[in-house]
Length: 85
Image 1 (tube, rainbow, N blue to C red):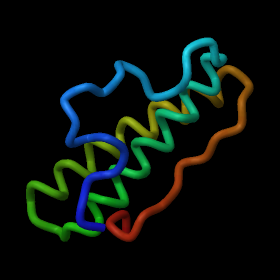
Image 2: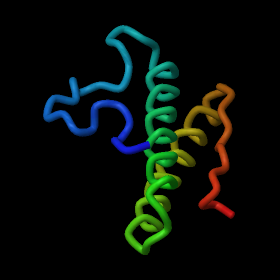
Image 3: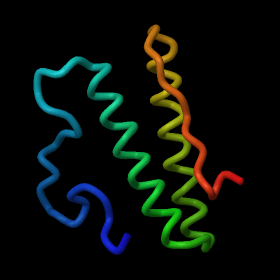
Image 4: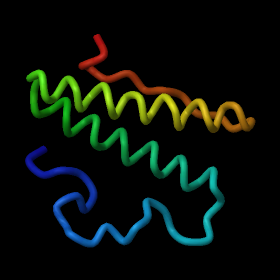
């Protein structure tokens, strides 16, 4: 993976991770997937101190989003990555 996932290099992020009109649950699931893509990209870049810090921040975001969905009765799970080991 040589480029960040999604449109991270573009100035215009369209201010969204899911299409307008979708349910909040769908939007959060899309955001979780986007965080996971960033985790995968981060994992592929190696394990420097900077990357480990990025991983921790992304992992915190994924954990919080999964917890939010679960507390409101929706199914979501945290996915392990190689850097979690």
